Length: 232
Length: 227
Image: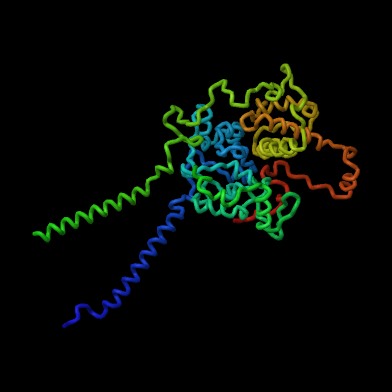
């Protein structure tokens, strides 16, 4: 009886079996990467805004403190988007005829709010509170990135749960002394740039982090990684 | 015949299975839970004509604990005239709080030393008077409170940005600033005096050199953000 299949079928079948595995694995890997990529998270993507407000100019250039505009960040869950009046504190006298600022002047005259598009937008099933993070020594730029160098605002982090948990599992990796929270140029301590806390100099983030966790009475990792810490 | 019907049935089943899978897949893309029909702060709402879900306060609303029964604390005025007393003791904590708040809200124009040459002034805002002139050195505390609360001349009010207690803390710090620019050597404790005289005078900071950088990190090259 003649052979039904040609000899080369052996190679082809082997190739397809392993090929199928590789293709499936590659597909899964691509899906995972896509899920974490800016395509999904919009990390690093500036959004169109009614006025091209530049944090780089106002924070990096002029040296305004975050809290000049985001007044409620230290004692409320919401950092606060400034009312138009805060813009007009300066722009009633500076750049008064700039066409770029026309929406701001319009808003101030009519009382109609400027409609900014939200950049750091957490899903609605996440309970997030700014004040607790600020008061436990999480720096603004730990989550928001180098805002003082962002001409247009974008979210620096993916804002995905794995990103939240990275810090909630090992908060000592990121904490800094409270008085450095708003410092956009803060550097974690190293041999040459020690960081002072409670009169003691620390040359490594490990020791500093552990000291801060203790001094600021952080709840246990078990507590802050429990589901209902963030989903309530 | 029988065979053909069977094949058609099979094709139907395959098609409906594919449809179901697609529906399930699309269901995964729904963002109902991400964007729930409730108001987070400042979220837009087309229920109201002005689209604001965070409603402006009705006139005359008094928040819990904010009944302004202590009129001096909230106005700085006694019988229509500015008073010259702190409504609470100016402790070290109060002064430190005042310094922090001053550097956030006042220093952009008044500069960190209070000479009125802050960064915003350098960019064209009308220059405020220095705190270190006789008129302001002799001005009562209540005058400063009134100016912060209601604005004065070109200065807008800061009533919304700075709560009353912080305004008083800032005023206490302004007094400290005024003293610092006029302090005679005789009020320095002897031990400190020797130390001061043996050291070279400190390099004066550039006015308005930045309100965000706390001392200790100035002068360093901008480091890369370390993660």
